[in-house]
Length: 640
Image (cartoon, rainbow, N blue to C red; front, side, top):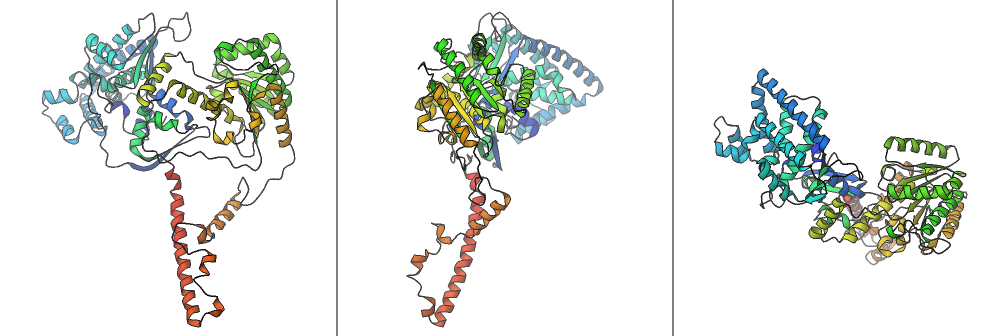
């Protein structure tokens, strides 16, 4: 987020041009218009690498989405009172500082590309035409008192807007029309709120910026609302937490991930997205708006032996299919087979086992059923059982105890949720994760209002069908869960996909290539008991004595092996480098040169000179190749 979030990137000078103050795509809130772009002499010759970029679109959307509730608005009203007091105090102490604050505002607009240098000079001149000032900077936000009054009217409007008894969803243009009618504020005034508030806080020399965080969120909300006519939606929900708790929330939800990453692509020459679970690759350029991608490449893992054992379990020994499909979630046969799978894996797999469910609600439902049927009691006889909760503090305690149980040799089972903290940021290397079990397919809640709005946007603007995006999103979360147990080339583990839908080609093909290449044909459609036998056989083979290879052909290179490999590459014959205009192979050279002992002395001398020239040419070509190798990584990046 140091690069993607505009509020952070402006402070760290890492991102592109300030997103909250640039022109909006497709025109303003009051109608269409040409997109305003920042004039740039050239792109910065830097390479930006986004690691763990499998969910970069979610990060982009989160960075531009702004939620507000009644508590935020009440605190914002108190912030405005405090700002009024600070302004009165500063005016008494030094009125010139407010004039300087206006000058910095004009400079900030010039740097953001809103106004050119000529217009900035005219705005800063002592004699300022009134019509020119109104066009460049609205009069109701030039003075600090007027700007605070504007924010007060905005907060009052949002407080009235939150008085709802049912959920609703509106577009930015609809909300802007209500602003213009009720508050008499146009989109141009809203567009400058973020930059104006930041400039005012700097002028007042506010040290504790966290104190004014609520009013800052309101400024972000209305700035994005007035800047973008497309790519956003406003969702109001009176019951966001749970039924029975009235706490209305309004969310300016971003629908287009390309809005956040576009300034980065415009500023830097090359951008690289990389992750061990970034699959399928062709989806990311679509949803991120990358138009000139150099290449997309998936690299496999070089391993000396089979260290992964992916298994797709589709049914139990009673032939009852296992799945987390909503219609079969409460089926006793499905829950029984899930429980038997966990029981048998606990007895077969040493050390740690990590389990993932699609959601907290389904996890609680299954765990309650397992408690009633005695499954957890039988599992706890072999390993300790820990659960991830929505409370991060309790989850940290559970993780600590889980690792301690694995270190003691007893082993443990961690039951967690896909898309949660454990699935995204915790590594279970070595004995902490010898097996991962994914119970079901982690689809998003399809009836979510923000998800429905995003699916409609993707279909309308990018031609991405609903099922295509949902399958893509579910499988990348599944891949992220599977990747928790393999963290190095010396690691090994069992990967169990416990749902019959994983056997379909549309889902199996979205698993990363480095996992697919270890998936045997006989491991695609398996019953729970057969999967346990396959896991036992795999773990038995991994427990056998094994002598790791050394040298240039080893899977893991030491510094000495790497130096030897580089020396070998540098001495590679020129004929092994095709297409570079080098000397012909030895068998072809024999047709051009006679044996040395049959040549006269003058010919032998000429041949020695030719060989010396060819060696110099070969060395020069190898030097050029070294330069090409240095640029090889850049070629994989989307060069903007």
